[in-house]
Length: 421
Image (cartoon, rainbow, N blue to C red):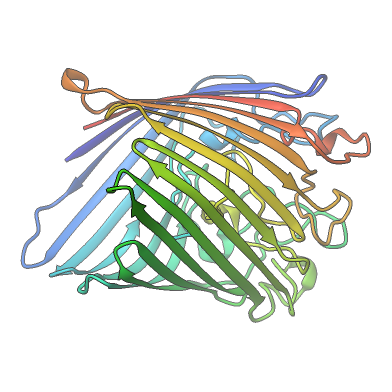
């Protein structure tokens, strides 16, 4: 048996005349996994939550031409007025394990570079899938999956793969008109595979392949180095990522106005990290470049991007010809308290360059400050998290507040209390 209670207060302070938002979400869940019998086990879990206190998260700001972006994500994007009927069967699976190989079938929570829980809200993204995990060799691991259903974060429903693309805001097409793919993407499954090689304890190489039926293919390679020196009291950390994406089938629909991406689509990126771990401190400099081709596209409903420059509350997905620079530091004070900061500068295409900027995000700088405290003793299982985010304007908005609203010149406050049994 397992149990989880979660309280989440979030508030956004937008620029000047634009609407500010606030919300308090409270929820709880329970799960059960049966003991293993001859390698077989099964389990289930569910979660319910309530919008205890908020302003109108579904109201449209006439100047910003949008509604709540962050707070609404704690509830249901499809029904902003839903405050009470927010429950979801989150897992229901059958699992077979033999030595260090396992096969899981059903509703589950997958963790991959691009399809992942993205659990920076009340509840994570989930998948209906077949998932194979093989770890028989110390230096070699293999994973493969066939996904046929999705339940994105910030929803209470389950969708087919195609219908799950477009649950979130769809941005603009390359012609500058609103994208028309919501509810029109024709895709039955996602196939993905992973090969991980560890030739040395300090080096890890991962290759991932994603095939989204009738939409696109993505090849992704990541190499991470953690090289110790000074009697293991310090180590150099370095990483390199490379990805290439191309269209598959008709991009989601034979009608190009309803396709997720156009036939002939080609995009790519590179991301790098260099830093050091010393005792209980970690520092890193990170850089990402999305190539000057088509926009890099991956459904935001399915997970956050794995770039080394990723910072909570913003993404570079949907852009091309983008340069991102971040500095990140973390400090583990003891076994209960962890804190840190990150600062980034993101050079984006012009907001009117619709071919390379799907979501109208201007160039910006961002500061994140976070704290994580885990209680011990009688309060073991209780965890407190705090996150502050500021995003400043560093590009042109042409005096149009829709490119400012919930994007830049704003602060976002988060206080989360978790209790796990």
